Image 1 (cartoon, rainbow, N blue to C red):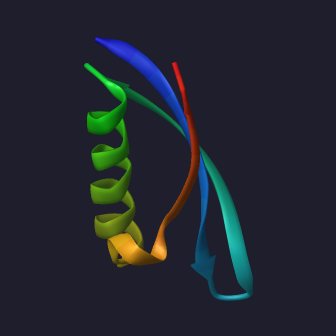
Image 2 (image 1 turned 180 degrees about the vertical axis):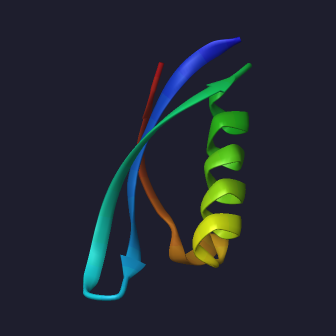
Length: 57
């Protein structure tokens, strides 16, 4: 598995909050899915609220 860096933003209490996450996944699509699931469970966000700007290998 490769390590991907996923960057983006999500709405927080006082405006947009930028993030950068390191994720181990077999490909980019799985890395993005893992970010969606992690932010959804930790921050109570829906997928439409999370804006993914870029994914780097």
